[in-house]
Length: 202
Image (tube, rainbow, N blue to C red):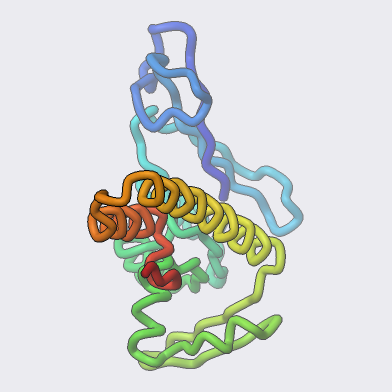
C-alpha cells in the first residue's frame, strides 16, 4: 500500500482540499491517492481521498478492501513510523492481520531505560529480542545511517568548538568579562545542538 499526494491547479474538484503538501506547492489544494499492489508490485486497486486526509486515516478502508474485495485471510502489513499505530493496530487485529511497524526514537529510548533493549545489540548486523506480551523486536544495524549520524555529530561538535574558540578569545581580550556567563551560554548552545549528554564544558 502506497500513499501519495497530487496538487491541483483547478478549483472544481469534489476531493480537493488543503492538507499536508509535500510538493512544495503552498496555497494549492490537493488530493490523496492510495495504491494497493500485489506481492509482485503490480497495481490492483487505486482510491482517491480528500486532500486533507492523513495517511493513517486511509488505512481502515484499505484493510476492508483487502479482506472483502480480494478475499485475503492472512497477510502481514509492514508500515513506517507514521502509518501503523494505535487505531491502525486495532483495525489490523479486528481483521486478524499481522503487522510489522517501525518504532520511534522515544520508544527505543524507553525500551533502553527499561532494559528490554541494550545498546550493544545495535553493534550487531541483526538482532532479535522477544519481550512481554508476545512482542518481538528485530533490530538491524544500518551502516549508512550510522555514517549519517556520525557526520551530524562531528558537524555539531565543530559548531560548538567554534563557539568555544570565539568565547575564549573574547575572554582573553576582555579580562574583566564574566567567564561563568560565557560558560552558561555555551552549555545552552550544547543543549540546543542536542549534544550536551556527551560533551562536557569547563
